[in-house]
Amino acid sequence: MDAFFNTLGDSVLVAWKRENFSLESFPGIACAALEALPPAVHVDLAAFMREFLLNDAQPQQSMSGFGQPELVAYHHPRFYIQLLFWLDGTTDIHQHEFSGAFHVMTGSSIHALYDFEKARSITPHFRVGEVTMQEIELLETGRTVPIVSGQRCIHSLFHLDTPSVTVVVRTQHDPGTGPQFNYLPPHVAMDPVFNDELTVRRKQLLDVLEQIEDPSYAELAQQMIADLDFERGFFILQHCMGTLQNLGEWEAVLAGFEGKHGLLAVGIGATLAEGLRRQIIKDMRGCVTDPEHRFFIALLMNVPTRKDLFALTKQRFPEATPEATLCRWVEELMVDTDAGIASLDACFPADVEIDAEDQAEIFMAAFLHWMKGGKRIPAALRKCSAADLRELNTSFAGSSLRILAA
Image (tube, rainbow, N blue to C red):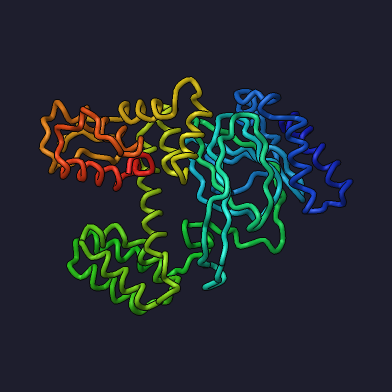
């Protein structure tokens, strides 16, 4: 067992025993212990990994799928200390069935806190309501953050560096705080552990129909939505969304769901669209290795307003204005594809007839124009018609850059 984490765990045990193992007191105790003995200062990560690999005398390990990987560094029947490695990790918006604190030992993260208001339970495993972001911040190496179990601490982390390592001091389980819901903004909470076996198999069978390009796919999806209850209908919609969009049938099937469930279904289309947007950005992140560009993608995925995005950019890169930094990133990510210039998923419109050698200049001028509010047309865009400008704006508005340029 690593001597540092043994010392840290024993200090937590002594302090918590003094409070008669009160669950309410544990987050404060965990934070105080991590701040008194910060792992970012005291732990040599390479030495820790070597000791863990070569020494059999380790605490009991879990079979958790959380982390890449999760290593248990201290274990007690009431609590334990884990190291969570993140190589390309982004956590869903979630709550916990445990309490404690986490400490950024290596790397940095975008951390967001949320509320879930006007909640209505559809089943014990599925709720609708309003998911709203309350706070977003950049966590640098050495930061310690409390974890409160249940709905009082709904949060997400987008890890920026490879690897990022967090140390978590946590209880085993806080009774009465489950399920450990995941949240799909802006309107859904779901228990990620619960699986309806029949729905799982139906989704797999729909995948077979998609693969063989069965012409009855959309009709069968529509009939399923017309018959299923709200929860299972939602999961079928979520699963089929991409295929139905490719078939041009998405709006009709969604309308069938909304017609069946009325006011209860208000916001489900927006929730599924937001889920698709987030997945697209996650997929793009997997192709990006530059730390600054990964930070940019993290902002595009998580930050709700342009003001917040500018503030976090300035905090991380204070040497330039946020506008200059963001323009530099968009330009650095620009590629010349067979279809024309593109940056991330924003593509130069095929209907805008501009010579290929001029597209990059027009693209960046248009991006900067709308990032500054889109009031006065700059000289670089005066060769574009009003229709061309609308096409460019539509391209940005339909991309991950829309928070900046739409």
